[in-house]
Image (cartoon, rainbow, N blue to C red; front, top):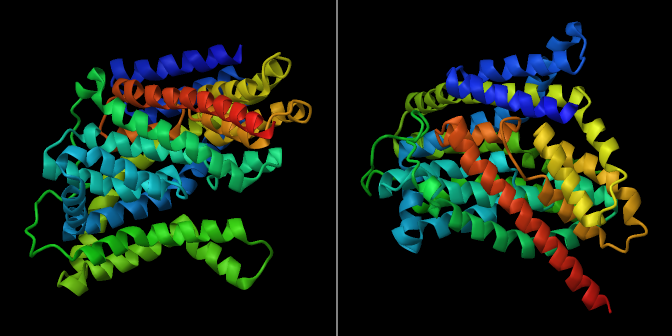
Length: 445
């Protein structure tokens, strides 16, 4: 049974990494090969499946993560990250630093991918940890939870947007309704989870090489205006392109240019160029110093990228092995409410495959025939599928490895923290969708 294969593969992976202390990159590839053999993928084709998975995942993330890490290190080594962190502390106070992270993350995360926003904000979180001497998870976890919520629940992120197209739902209405569910649910979990005893018992250190080690005096740091401008520059470019895409249609050179500049790799590349000047020659730092900062960031990112790429290989083996088709065939005849069924199928696919995008696209295809005669609002169906796709993030989810490596956690600790918060978010999301459907039905009477 395919789901049994998935379960056993996860257990084997945990054994290799926790008991045998095998490197995550090697462990993921070994388990991926084993699953490929069990699922009947031809031996001659397994290297191509692994390469496709690694290439697809690295192709999506390497430029974003690599450029983002370099920007963060340049800002950190110049004092710009500390300037922003100090301003947040002045505005919110050390007691409310978590609220500052939630507000910042939700505003940035509405239009930005989880990985992109994570890479942009995490240097600020690291700097706040160093300045306040707080626990890394106390500051960083609210950021990650808020970003996960925005990315998984709301358009214009790829999963919800794709499902909205399948269900012929209004993207604007989906975003409007989704905000009423995502913001309170995400804020609640973001503020509660760091306070749970099993989370507070963890005290990971900031990964070496991703943040400046020294503290700057006020005279040494660049001004707040330049610091914020560089930090928000990619946000403006990416969010602006997303808004233009939502409110316009057609083809024109201007729209193509906006889309090009607003793509995450190009926006971050332009930001790195701006940061290199603004926090280099403009303030008296040599370009050699700026290049050294970029080199340090690249060295620190090497293993993180390898592990994320291997996670992509594992995910691709599960997809090519027919796991998603099996789940689709099994669940098509279940006599369940369309909203609950859509959410449940997305959850099962997320657990089995790790890819939220594959989960939402497959789940929407299964429940689409049920939508026409059910009377269910299509926007609520979009939100049901989208929030289901966030559940049970674990070792077959490349985002899990990003979270684990940046917060310097063991595999088991990452499962305790990330797998639990994503699952509770999915359950709260389903409750919000069911309540929202009742409200819309009542308003229609």
